[in-house]
Amino acid sequence: MQIDRRSVLAGAAALVAAPASGRAQSRDYGAAAAYSAGRRGVSLLVMQGGRVVFEDYPRSTADATHELASGTKSFCGVLAAAMVQDGLLTLDEACADTLTEWRDDPVKRAATVRSLLSLSSGVGGGPIGRPGTYAASVAQPFAGSPGVFRYGPTPFQVFGEIVRRKLSAAGRPDDVLTFMDERLLGPAGVSHGPWRRQAGQPNMPSGAQFDARNWARFGAFVQGGCRVDGQAIVDPAALADCFRPTPANPGYGLTWWLLRPGLVPPSPRSPIDSSAAALAGLPTVNMAAGAGDQRLYLIPDRDLVIVRQADGILARLAGGGTDWSDAAFLRLILN
Image 1 (cartoon, rainbow, N blue to C red):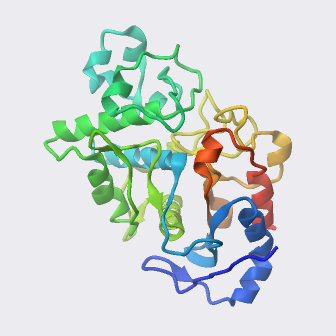
Image 2: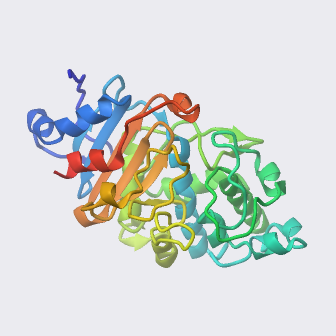
């Protein structure tokens, strides 16, 4: 297969390009690039030790932004860790402390920020790709009792409303995206493209657009402990909780996927690998994942951050087939 390579290894502000030649990079990562490009891939970036060691943009360019789809969800866990450090919330506080309309419902009253972000609060998942507004999501009846993993956009919109009300109560502007940009992404040197909004607020479960470099930069920031000038700018314990298995799903922490046996996938048709056989031998892999096989992989044991983006999101949401395998792709990278 011929791959249109536009390896751009000059890097951007916070990314330092590796000095290796394009030919050496092609030899190292060509199989992984071919695997991605053959499955609608539009970008592939590999970073190790904070240095870009490979970039490939078939049918795209380095500065093109692409929708992350549900890869957007994983920003919520890091935002929660920042708010813990700021004293704006705790992970184990009741959501009803902020969502006062939940106080009279015994099931809703028991939901915590932690159970909300681990998708085990009882909040229904909602239709994939079509979230309601923050207000509609808060007003939605619970899908059932807590302790069951229910994947979907609604919990993230509910979290958005909690953030909005927390900011308002603290006397701050209540635009959630502006707060996230100023509190997290800007200090991390991360910029993004358009972010879809509903009723004036950012869509928290999907709709962010990033180029590969900036999504990778965010991944390196998170994997490095969210440090700026050597100081953590989020609560370290809350950040660590993002990557701890939860009782309802051993393969999901707080808004991040954990590629390990026992993972409960988003749906039976999801391409996210969950079988012990598929995942055998892989190192620890934490992942933000979206429809169309958008991926941000964090591999702490190898100090690796990998971004893979693709087109065809709408086709995947409509049930279009794919032969994407996280395990197969990662073995091509790691080997």
